[in-house]
Length: 211
Image (tube, rainbow, N blue to C red):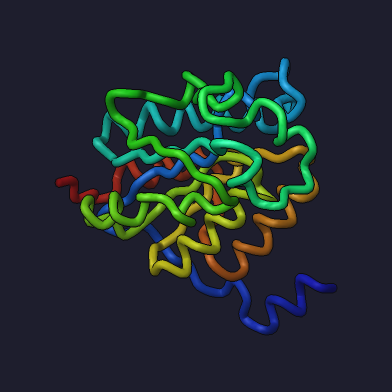
C-alpha cells in the first residue's frame, strides 16, 4: 500500500539518466570492511559488492572514466565524531591495517584516493574539486555501507547538483534489508538505481566525453 501512495504522489516518476562526463565513486571499500578477519568485515553482502564493483571498475578504467575512492580513518579519538560503533575506536587510525584499500577495487596509478572522516565521501574532502576539474556531471556511487556512508554520499551528490546513478549490486551493508530499503528510497527521490550489468551496457553505447 505504501508504494502505491508514493507512486500516486509521483515519487520515482522521472529518470535522471547519465550525463556526458560520468565518474565512479568508491566509498570505504577498505579491508576493515571487506576482509572477514576484522569485526566489521564479515558481511557477505559487502563481499559480493566488492566483486561486482571490481568488474565495473575494470570496464570503466578502460573507458577512461575517472575513479575517486576514499578510506575512512582518523589521527586519534580526538578528531573522531561521536560514533556509536564500538569497533571503530580500535584499529581505524592512520596507518592501521584496516585502513588499507582493498586491492580488488583500487588501482593506485589510476584512482584519486583520499581520506574521509565523516559518513559522506564529500564532507570535508577534496572530492568536489577533483570532480569539477574533470568536468564531471554524473556520479556512479559504489561502496559500503548502503544505509550509512553510501546513503550520506548519495544525498550530498544530489545536493551538489550531480546526476546520481547507483549500481545496487555494487553497494553492500551488514544486512540486506536496510540496503534494499535505502536504495528503494533514494530511487524514489535522488538517483537512478539499477544492476551493474545494466549500467555497463548503458555505458558501452553512451557518448562519454573524456578530457
